[in-house]
Image 1 (tube, rainbow, N blue to C red):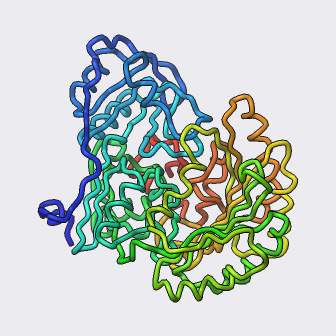
Image 2 (cartoon, rainbow, N blue to C red; image 1 turned 90 degrees about the vertical axis):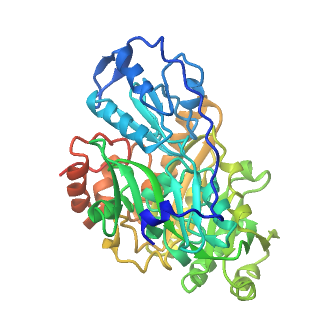
Image 3 (cartoon, rainbow, N blue to C red; image 1 turned 180 degrees about the vertical axis):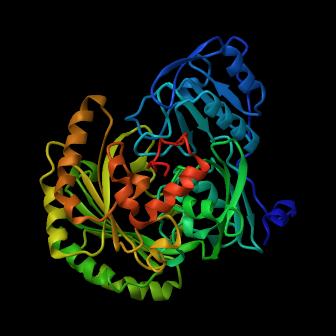
Amino acid sequence: MRRRDFLQTSLAAAALWPARTLIAADTAGIAEVSAKTLTGGAIALPGADVRDLAAGMRGQVLVSGQDGYDTARKIWNGMFDKRPAVIARCASPSDVMRAVTFAREHQLLTAVRAGGHSLSGKSTCDGGIVIDMTLMQSVRVDPKARIARVEGGSLLQHLDRETKAFGLVTTAGTVSHTGAAGLTLGGGFGRVGRRFGLACDNLSSVDIVTADGRWVTASDTENPDLFWGLRGGGGNFGVATSFEYHLHEMDPMILGGVIAWPAAQAREVLRFFAEFSSTAPDELNTDVTMVPGAAAGGPSLILMELCWSADKAAGERAMQPLRSFGRPLFDKIGTIPYIAMQSSGDANAAPGSRFYSKSGFFTGMTPQIIDTIVAAFENAQPNPVFISMQQGGGAVGRKPVGFSAFPNRQAKYWAMIGASWKDPARDEQGIATARAAWKRIEPLTSGFYVNAMTDDENARVAANYGPNYPRLQQIKKKYDPENLFRLNANVKPA
């Protein structure tokens, strides 16, 4: 179905989430605003320029001291408490065009916030401009064409709730308050990814405002080079204002839940998981997490979360080897709503917690890898860490490396080691513990997931993209030659 036809068609069954409520901020008293440039220099933004930006937008422009500024500057990871010079809360593509033009003309350090869920804190900045998409959250579903059109500030829960109403789904992460834009542009793993591919694999088009302030559409037929780069290349090329996803039929009730064993059995569980997962059907997603006792509310555990998205009788048979292995502490597998499973990890990833992680991919699960993971978990001092592994392969691995910018197609597992705490006084200790544990594991990994990168991994970006990096550099040179969009897994213009 053509995009233009889709936009012009009135769908009785279509849904919007949520309605916008816009309250214009009082900008009349804005005087000179101290700001930071792309190169780190200090500049003074004339108050008239900031007032002019606000006057031309449907959304809001906020600066320090205004009502709403301190709320708007907060992001998911409590580790980052930054103070932008300007927050442009966009309500439409034309607002985004205006904000990007303002940022470019003033050479401002520029961050883009969709869901604000970046682990590295790059969805905000000190002294620059934040182009904030959180007012743009409509989701429109065309059940006949099996397409969802999703605005750039939408969260995964918005997408999942609307597609559920029609018995449809697309791959959409594992934490429901994640932004759809960031997840998708970086690749997009999820509980149905082995069956239907990454979130970026399910894109049919993206509307984006590039660094020159133009609004363009990227698809297989329009700006195909940009479309290739957007599917895995992150936020390097502009501000995505909307996405169009292919949808798939799926029963809203799935078979899933969690099985747990004592962490003392971790080696045996992981060895069995390695054997089982090598031949597991695509319809089964398996995430394994080693959880420290402090987080588990008792002894340390190894948890296995299962999600079967097809025929339930077949799912019962497929899961039986896992459910009958060893002596689980509990087995909470059952028929549950898919959207309930999609939000099952939300509390453990609540906004405001201080979070640090490292991640990488395994091309297999060898005895050496298993022993190293268990040792890293057991010896993490003085802070506990969690270690999670999500199975790859399936539809993700059947695409060639050059299909899109996303480079890690051959990975069989994605692993993350992380630590979370609330007291800022524990920052240094928490980061050091996670880094020390990851130092054991990293030599066994291949590449990393850009959606989970930390601020100290920019030097690894080129190697991570491998053969796709030179092509990304050419696209960057074409659409963002001055590297306006650099707060990301940054690709340097060729």
